[in-house]
Amino acid sequence: MFRHTLTIVRIATIPIRLHWSWGVVFGLLVLTMQPVYALYACGTASFCGAGWGLALLMALLIGLAIVLHELGHALVALRMLVPVHSITLFAFGGVAEVERDAPNPRAELLIALAGPAVSFGLALAGGALWWGYGGGAAVAPVAVLAAHFALANGVMATFNLLPGYPMDGGRVLRAALWFMAGDALLATRRAAQVGKFFGWALALGGLVVAWLTQQPFTALWMALIGLFLYRTASASHRQTRLQMALRGVTVHDLMQHHVRTVGRELTLEQFVARYMLGQAELGFAVVETAPDSTHSQLLGMLTINDLRRFKTNQWASCLVGEAMTPRSKVDTLTPVMEAYDALGVLSVAPAGMLPVLEGERLVGMLQRRDVAVFVQVQLAMR
Image: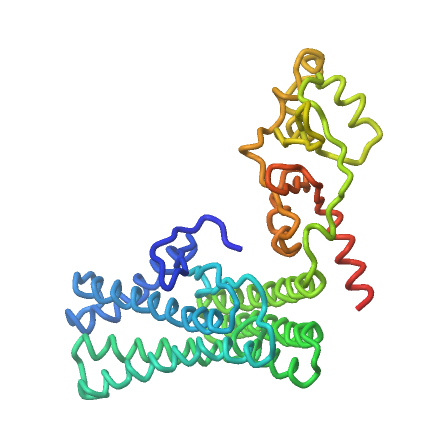
C-alpha cells in the first residue's frame, strides 16, 4: 500500500513502519507546538531550548499514541485470525494493513472498536495524570503535556468514530449494515458512500473555515483529509469487491495450462518472427527440457521490455538466452496460491504475467487480464 517506508521496530511480529510523509507532519507538529511550550517553560514564545524539547517530546507521544491505536486494531485482528501485514504512520495518521477483510460482522465490529478504545484509554490516563498535578491550576510542564496528550487522544478517538468509511466509525457502520443485510459487498458499498459524503463535507468545510476564520492552514488540512477520505473510501470499496470476487479462487483456477514457451538458443529476430508478430502475448517463458524428461525447467522470461533493450540491427546476432530476464529475477506463483494474493504480485510484473511453478516445474502462466476478466464476470453475476 505504501512505498518509501522505514521499518523501525516489530511488535508481536508486526512491523511498525514510517512513511516519509509522517516526517513532514512530525516537523510541522514540533514547529507549531514549540511557542506554546516555550511559554510554560521559559515564559516567552521566542526561541527556547526547553520549549523545543517539550514540543519534540509531545510529537513523539502523539506518534506513539497513533501506533498504539493501530496496534489495538492489529492485535484484535490477529485474534480474529485476520493476518496483519504491517502498521504504517503517514501524513494523516496511521493504518494497520491487513491481508483480508474480517470474516463476519462481529469480527469487523470488534476490530473497528479496538483502536478508539485504546485512544480513549490513553486519553483517560493522560487526564488522570493532569488531574493528579492539580488540574486546571497546574502549570508544571508534565501536567501540560498530560493535558495535551489526553486531548489529542480524545480527538483522535472521536474523529475516527465518525461514520465515514474506511475510518473506524465507518467500519462500525459497515459491520451493522452487514449484520442486518447479510451482504458484505452491499454493506461496503453503502458505508463507502457515507465515507465519500464525509470526505466531501470535510473538504467543503475547509473552504468555509478559510472564509470565516482566515486560517488557510487549518482549512487546507481539513480539505486534504476530506479528499484523502473520499479516495480511500472509493479504494476500499474496490478492494472489497475484488476480495469478494476472488474469494476461494486459486491461481490454478485462472492460469493458462497450455503455455507457449521459447528456447534460449533462438535469435531475437527468429523470436519476433515466430512468436511476437500477430500475437497478443507480451512475454514468454524461456525453458529448457532435459532429454530424459517431459517437464520444462524455467530459465527466465523474455518480455517486450527485454526486447526494447536491443536495437533492431542487433536482433540477428543476439540470442534469447542473452536478452531474457533470468529466473533469479523473475517472481513466480504456485498453483495453490490465492488469486487475490497473486494479483498483488501481478500488479508489478513487467508484462502483467507470471509463470506458475510446481516445485521447479513450469505448469502454467497467469496473466493480469485473465484475473480481470474473471472478476468482471463475477461482479456482473452478482
